[in-house]
Length: 480
Image (cartoon, rainbow, N blue to C red; front, side, top):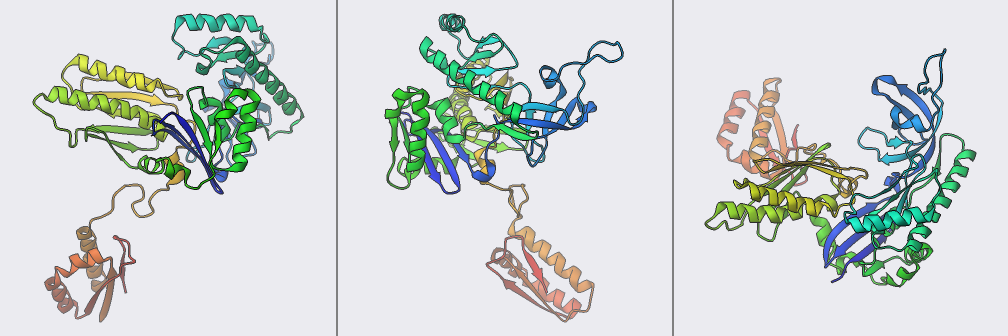
């Protein structure tokens, strides 16, 4: 099965899945109430300057103030000379700044913003504040880098604007690159004019939504089909593609039936990305535990048949795990500090091979990452850029019962708690009759100890009734 992009549209959300040979490679969700603002450009007003943080909070007319490092504004606000002293940067309340959101609000934090604006096109990123021409480091072939640099010089782009060649530009013609550059130049001029007229704080430019963003970044020649299950979205995507990728319009298909993701075998794969355990073909598995700023991936041999050589067995499992770990980071869009704990290997060349495999798989990732190395214990430390909220963040909330612990008390533990509460109540007053209702599993545990309950009744001269309530959560105890 060839590579496909699947677009599912529902009244309350849009979902996009990138599938390669029937296997889910990337998955994204966007909902109206959680709309992505990364890439949006605002004319903001400085609300508070915090010298101790070397930062400012900027009013963007959003729910929370944007966080801006003062070092970012050097290209936006002209340094001033004070009392004959050397020029320095002066930033004060109510100054207006043109900023772009580079990281979504997270937890209690507002959006991270920057004055260094970048407009992403198909083959270029235009940087208005940095008149530098460069080529993505992910284009490693020297001959291709040289060819692209020659095209950059031949295009005679505006000297006051910067252009970074994106990875997707590999193998593209001068005409294709020129068309993309002209589109970005016109877009920037429109943004400049809009910013001049706008009153701060206000939105000046809105980044593409999820579907158009994925098409811009991932709808390449190797994609066999783009399938959309909404007629309105189908026509919208065709118009968008036709504006700069006319020859690719033929690859867009409208899916008339229902359950596109289920029919393509994607729905079950999506459900599995929310599970903490990921099983490998070898019957080994990964355990993935994200926290607010850290992700731990633990490699376990599980049901893998180790054979006679533990070292070779560990190497085989780790090699499979390295490929899957990189895929899961993309699929779950996990970010922050990441620790991968591979199974211990004695041979240094085995550890080096696992590290190289992981790096090769990570090179398929569009997010920025940095890998430090692999220790003699098989531990890899790395970071991965977190820009958007992951599918898990959008789809799940903290469990109201376990409050994020991931576990609940056992029936025996709850039965002991119930006993203590009951004894405390009877000891504190003259109760002739007491009723205690609990979950059925806890009820079973309590009934194993009828002798002590009889003793409690005699001690406090009270009648005790224990009821089973199937509607109760495991940890619920109600005494009346």
